[in-house]
Image 1 (spheres, rainbow, N blue to C red):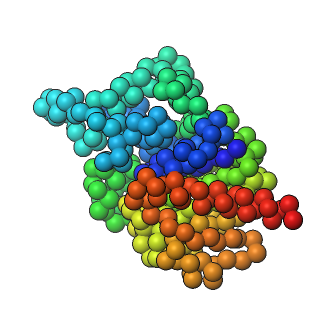
Image 2 (cartoon, one colour; image 1 turned 90 degrees about the horizontal axis):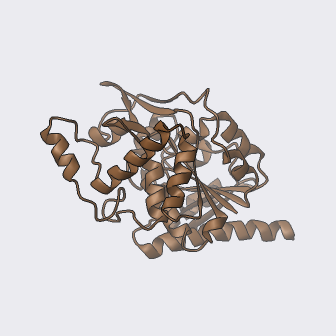
Image 3 (tube, rainbow, N blue to C red; image 1 turned 120 degrees about the vertical axis):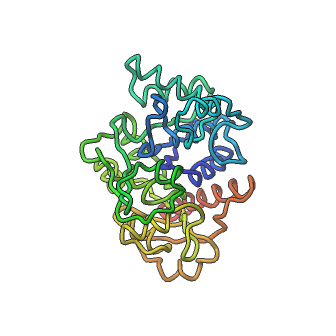
Length: 315
């Protein structure tokens, strides 16, 4: 059983590769909900939706988010009515938000609503929100405090980041099944997602981080950093705000209390050799997922680290 912690487009790409080489009933995906928001009165979970669309082969490869082949007639009409249109919701994507909102209005938790949608899409992998409780990623900037989607989408992450907080995390509890998925897995993989705003909200829930420390499974992270830059998005700016070096060293530091192995890009191989120590293996490969083949190859390389650890323990 492989358990993945994920969020953002990098995480969705990695899961896309993984789903092609692992039987879906052996895959559990714990998803960031710090980006969740209310949009036009609807409950929107962007990272959950990306994972659902990937697993159902419905994700738009061109955009990296949303329903493939979608139209945007509702968005255009809402703009004509004077409503906000900066969050680009497609028509088919809108159906997902309506269904989720309906299920929650009927009394279901986010996890229960996600399970219903998962089954409707014919997905047999298990998809779990990190929590049923509201945890909101808040970005402090010179212009004031912003919700993550407002910072990332509306303002295109141009603001200086002064700090990041996860409102509600202290009181939040893991969703049912989350701790068990970590504690009973053969391996737990942290996808190549932003360590601050994609993985950070998950780890801000104390019981989840503690489970990662306690699990007998090996914990492997795929770096979202190559050299001294993020593969995509504002990870570098956000890591700097948290006092983390923008490098594979910064990724290792972010997860230092539970990490067993780190998968880095081939261009960071020498750096990885210097970073490696008895309690942390470092494996280098191509981590840039520019094609469908790249996604599968990276997923396969990560699984070799699971095998390598198993063989080492056997000896």
